[in-house]
Length: 117
Image (cartoon, rainbow, N blue to C red; front, side, top):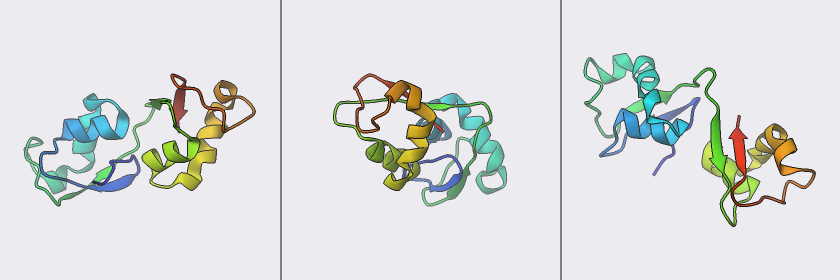
């Protein structure tokens, strides 16, 4: 199962709706309209009709910050893998959250709210 990540393409899977894709990409299904506007030519006039295999562009949404609540066992590597598809991008998350995390990027605490740039 591919992850819907802002700034990347996403292949629609059976059962997907624009709402569920927006919920996955932005943690907020209300952003479905931005996905529709970015892909109107591909989707067609009815935003409720998605075909499995259709490739959609998941746009960056201005002013919308994705957040993530740390769970037990999480690492910045795993969080970066989840959001960016690449654990090596963990430094981006750390740089955006140094004040919350502190000097040790390995010292994550369950329940901490992180901003995902």
